Image 1 (cartoon, one colour):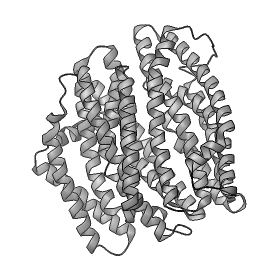
Image 2 (image 1 turned 45 degrees about the vertical axis):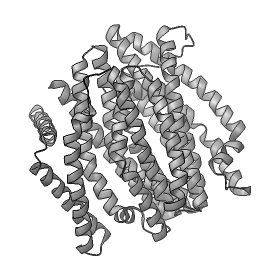
Image 3 (image 1 turned 30 degrees about the vertical axis):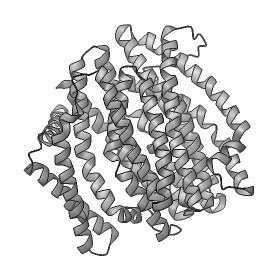
Length: 514
């Protein structure tokens, strides 16, 4: 019970920080949409910055994910000092790799730019090349931030690594408000660098009590070799995931000017859900799973895994119903002002609906991934991701032709099913007693309740006052109430457990303070 309370408590704290971060992100994107709209300038900025952030993240998150499991294993079996030495060696290696990647990006920027945006030519292509070279420095920031965050996560301190949005978003908002007219999208570039410098220094300070970086080029260590071999499949897997995003944006650029920006605006809204709930829980559970695996406590692995899947399904299903029924209202509330037109709002809403149908699917995929990682298996998740990306690419091309931007985002959601099927079969070798089919009664109840919530949301939307905000609040509230009532009528035990655990944790926190 104590460990369950720890998971719930950590989740609530990180979710609170992420909600604040995403709320600021909403404001940032709203300001950007209002001052810049959706045009070729925003397309260039988003395509270049997202590619570099995604590529550096693919390289370094693969290493840090492996580092968390190795770090915990060494700390449990030896001590923290040995674990910190491994972290220092890995950061040294990361920085060396970052230098190589920065050089390669600068040399091959013209080829990368043409791949990212096949339709760009002349001055537009030259600007994209320049932005790619500028953003290549992202590797240095990500190297420091990833290692510091990984060490803190391994030591059950999950909040600091999620402070980036709290730091960066206010800076970006400030720069756009004051300098967008004079500097254009250069204001966003300056904000990016300022935010990353401050975040890196902040993480270093918060990590100083646990870990101090001491450069070391002595890589003749079995744990380092093991970590690198674990990281290679993760790297390939993450690169293919980023390739998935690149393909989607490239297809968006073929649809016309502004579509890539509209896709990114929808993606920001989607991340409010997946990064706040799914990514937060998967981050915490990776450390928890790794600890249980090191302790050879298989029963707790299975119990925690089942509870995480059930909880995510119950929470995300009604959100899907609300997002799919009220996508246009949501987009208009957040973005529709000044340079952001109704056409942009419609395109962004279609993309958001495509993302929305996959909230629970993406969450399941991430849980299965983290469970494999905790057993230090990175090869099969790589294979599953490669297959999923191939499916997504084919679906995106086909669906975009017939249903436009909705088809591109929907393909991302649908392709997650392939990954889940493959990982569910693979996970049997680690927890043979687990059966996803045992969740069928819960899945049926949630689907029925979600369908009712969707219908209620549409019904209230049609009779609500002609105000985006009022209509959204009334429809979402009615949908949520209908969902909970129907689950209660259907006697959903997992809902009772979820409410009980959350209430117990809150009461425990209140009593502890007094």
